[in-house]
Length: 393
Ligand code: 3PG
Image (cartoon, rainbow, N blue to C red; front, side):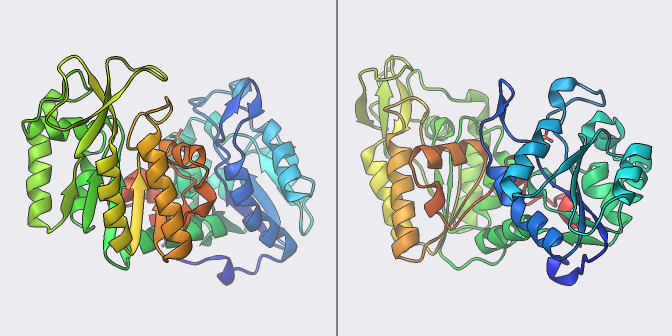
């Protein structure tokens, strides 16, 4: 794919697909990571004399002008992050947007209203794509985190204009390629989370690509139960036992070692700071539930990590939002950070919960790369082609 290295934006109107779908609570932005990561691309384009027309979706207004889902407040946030003015246009296509684009001077930045105010966005309607293409001379996609959507602003328009990957898109793709495309081995993957059923494709794809697959979180209970261990009151998916056994079988065939918990931290109820016990996987009391993996498991994971050259991580090992069930996740996150800083481990992490867990452990900035994507990162781990990326190729 072509990057900003292949584009001379001087005097050109550049339509920049950003992902400004940032978390907002009571009208305030609670996490500016996506905005901050977007600024290098905007700054580079503007400094080179481009006229930058930013567009994005925000939330899921389903084709209606839902006022709380306006991108208007984001113009100010962008302007603050960039240190340059960003004006706002009330629609992403049509006469007003066209007039605003035509009036731009070199280095100007404007932000268009939510693309999802038009039903055509999610339908990948060619008319909406044409309306967007009409505004610009070139298209830059910096929204890796929305690239799993084949929408008018991520896919349709890319086919109508000369299309390039922005710096954030480029960084995401390079990091993911280093993790799974062409990694230095051994590769360890850590996968956690509640349900096997939502991560079937991911587990299948990873077990054919990595050398060690660590399974933690509540989904590990399903695997342990499938192997005949009794898991007490632990969260698990009884209907997934056959599938879990199949995944283990396939991994064996692929020479992928699956590391399941050896010990568990159990409690009678799921609540903060309840009394806990650490037990072997064969000693989970019938009236208790597993909420974290235990210290022997952490040690086993750390042993694999010391041998590893690359780590890809998605999903916490325990119920990390509720202490003390953050213990294993925090311990492993700190080991990963230390190995990344001192032993050259390439650590790539992503997915909403994973990023929160790394932040909670205080090490999000000590990984090799933390993806700003949620769903798109998962689909990449599943081995799927992302339409927004494919359209750049
Ligand atoms: C995300 O936040 O993961 C992306 O912006 C995609 O949002 P969506 O799930 O509403 O398509």
